[in-house]
Length: 417
Image (cartoon, rainbow, N blue to C red; front, side, top):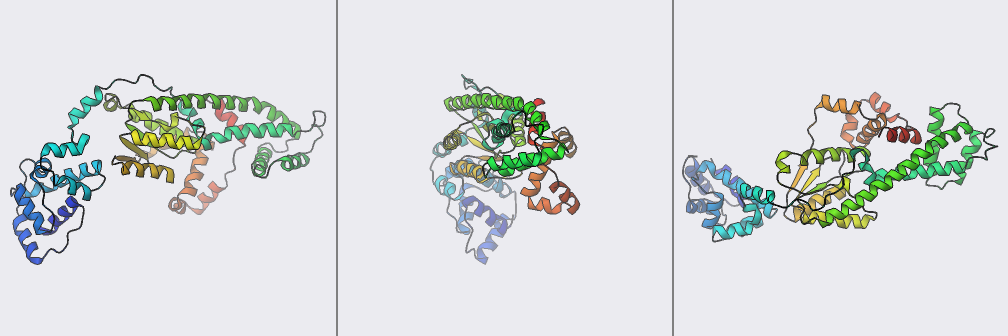
């Protein structure tokens, strides 16, 4: 080890830069630290710190973080141990060093570190001895998890309302055979609210594109066949949300919470991806044995957004750690959950999926084509760098995708479930 390396370690230990080290001090450090096998005791480490103008430490600090046969070469391991516990307990190095370096006994130092000073075997035993859940949630199936979202499920409600609106604007039964499409479309758009006109216009245009030359009578028959499916979707939405509301009540009754999953979910596939990740992770035998409890946002719902925020804030406060899912795009809400966890001195694990290209390609091929198109468009418009890497021809191809007619898409999608 040379002088610069020790100066780097001292800065990492105390959390502040090393200043005003003279050439003489550097020469002394170089002479003292040249042999990595040289033993270093408590007083000697303090003397090295004083050479670089850093505060000394009590013996308890040295014994806990640098215990054993400490040498010049193993000083870095002691600093790393300190930094790890400092971040878990305090969230920074400066306050941690100033607090812990002045404690007089190892027992008092461990008391300040609280559970972070516990041995892994003791922690495992403590978790494994906990009682099982008295009441558990009712698991919402993967393919229905998007119904607990505000944005993702809004289309189910909107489609039912649009279907009812269009059926109400059809001419009388005896006048349907002779009705013209331009007149029908004009009547629909005139009766619609300003905010709904664009969606209805696209819907009608897509139907005509998929059914070239279709008449108003054929469209009326189409609406007649689609209406029961949409009504079934609405019934299913109500059922799933009732289950999700019950699940949220159960989450609130649990005596403890270990893991909070922070994510941004707007699209159906985002709910399904998180469902897969959470259930795969928590089914790991190493975790199952620990009786961990976790809050899964794909399984809970609150009608009021303010209540939802309060519940999630409470889950964040109670959880021992947060798992932050790195996705195609990240939101201020998800980032604030990360920040709130760190501000409480608790750890955040950022999960970035490792993808095997061939396996992922096979999964996408098996997906609903409309979902794949949506995902591709979403990534292209959300990630500027990725969009720039796509050829002009391919980008034009993606931009040219026409939305599949809403009723047909939902009928096919829900029928497959």
